[in-house]
Image 1: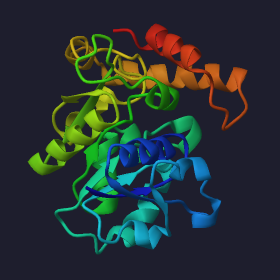
Image 2 (image 1 turned 135 degrees about the horizontal axis):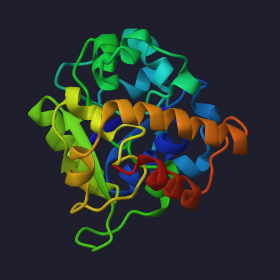
Image 3 (image 1 turned 60 degrees about the horizontal axis):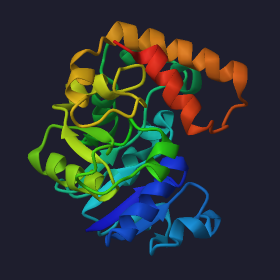
Image 4 (image 1 turned 30 degrees about the vertical axis):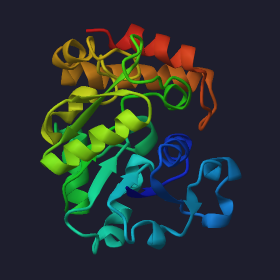
Length: 248
């Protein structure tokens, strides 16, 4: 497929590498220009382009930017064809993004995103730690393959996103609609806990929104005590912390 990726951070760069390696035609852009994209991101065939080029002539557009920057993308996506599959990988973290009143009052993060962009989206790869995404993909059928939930309202968005998740080395699971996508967001039992396909339905079903919000606050405090802003901790630390805090 023809895929554009906006964002070359920890998640965006890994998706560029993995999806190009899987045979897709991948373009990747960031806010600083093509010349700033690391050569390693392009090692399997992805191309560095401008953000305008990344949203042109693509069947799929992946958004991998900080959550607070989502509204700024609306003008860029205004002329994107309605049938283009838009996949959002971001998460709302109040300690990082500042508090958004609508979400604080109960609106699902991804519903807020659809309102900002004025179009449907799919939600995927937001429940998996960036190091896990980069290092822990396994072939289909492997007994220890980690599962990734996908939320979407349109059938095409769901089907395409599930295929791409499989291409990155993880079991894709239909987690339902965008209004229900809070079940796979930070603080939930499915978030960064590396559950398998057999374990994921129970993890999603046991999510509690109020509890998840409290767990996000706790995790943010632990992170700020141990690390400088922008530091990417080791996988073991994040997975163990998530399993401890996010357990149902």
